[in-house]
Length: 321
Image (cartoon, rainbow, N blue to C red; front, side):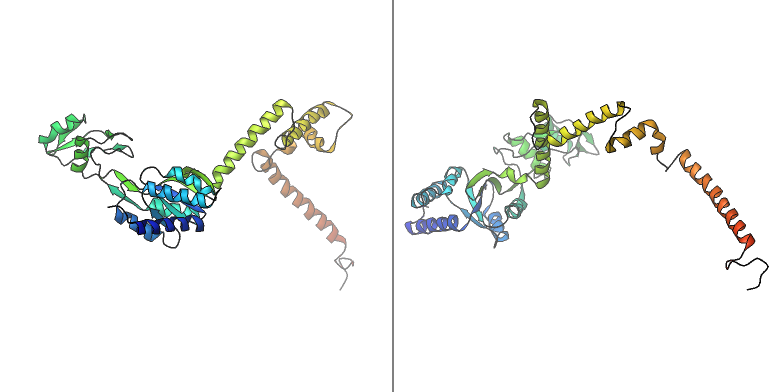
């Protein structure tokens, strides 16, 4: 039954109040979401966000009136989102936190005849619990089966329904026989409105790690392009300096009478690479271990020679203290 004029006025005032007090909102789709499930979502969002549902014509009319009263308001962008079974979730808090609450409140549901499958349905192979007399039912669906221990058993994992296809009566009946509830329904995020900007909800999937990776890739592309064109940029200068150093170093190494501090290390390495060999393994470690006792023996001999002629106070060996 249509709303009375008084109820419509209350609804208009409520929506205008929300778009005035909140700077962010989700445009959500609530297909196949029951009133009890929606009420549970409202409860979880209490204190964090407000949910407002309504007829598309009413929401569009209210938003148009608000834009007329407030010319230039970015809320005008929300008018075109009022298509389908949608509503608004207003918040001033963290969009990510509100999104987690919305997406976590889902319910399993059976496949209904004639509905579009929101996801692919693959039935796991194994015993079905159906008696051998129902073999023709599986053959109709082109599912390979065998009889095992007095019941029908599927020998592979058939793709029963493809995403986006309509659910037919035989397929819905099979899922019901197997007690499979293949779909989950909940509030679906369509768009995000944030301080006058409207964008797809998938943008919220972009994390700091994703941004850093994309920025790094773009930086590499800019540096490569700048080097190829010979146009120095902030991204290419470090590479240009490194390339210049390599060119100067290669020339310096070939010169006999000139060098500079940074090139000395490379020249020394080219003359005798063994100096830079690691001492952690191979023959280097054994040589070091063999030299150590020899040095200790020499030190002992020197101490013996010194102690032979005088004591620690400078007196002869035979003297009294």
